[in-house]
Length: 267
Image (cartoon, rainbow, N blue to C red; front, side, top):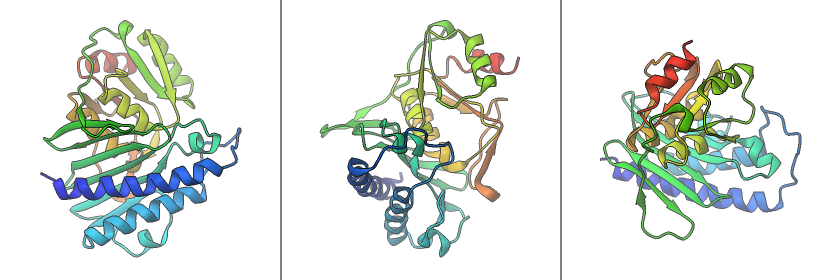
């Protein structure tokens, strides 16, 4: 299922990734880049992705972060919807620490069918299709490897991943979990891929408001690898709603840690 959509998403990510690496090589680092920074590279990456998708599926709706020409001339909602973040973690791109990704998701009637998270600087690719599992391909790997979440069942043994810009509330909750290790990144796509790859066990996102493109692709990676993704109150997340907004955070885990983590954030 969704073989053609996956093929198009992977090709779009590959094309955009090549352009971003060319830009990244010569980009002048911005050490104090703010959280809301956007760059010309974001817009070029988005146009590469959206024009490729639109050529393959001209009737599909497009939802993306940047105001670009292709987005302006296509419908934004529909039963078949592509959700794109052309650079997730632009602060990581701007600071040149490698913590950025390309996120491409396809949603059909509120079900995520395809998710792709590409990390050009690290040469890591993680992708999934609904009921088709989650897969990774790194560097020059020719054959994809299937991803499975970890089997860690105790909060104190877990690796928690969170944003570098997490606020006091996130710190309070992460302290309460007493994880064995904390990994921070500017990119939500990277953090969700870490869960899917069993390189982390919990991703805690405490932002009161964010957008579909921040998490949609990575959401599918985690669930197809055997994990669980909800809001911080345990609620089901929906995509393609008006404004493409998400509220009240996100919790992604290996599944076994979901209930204990929800008890902590609900306290």
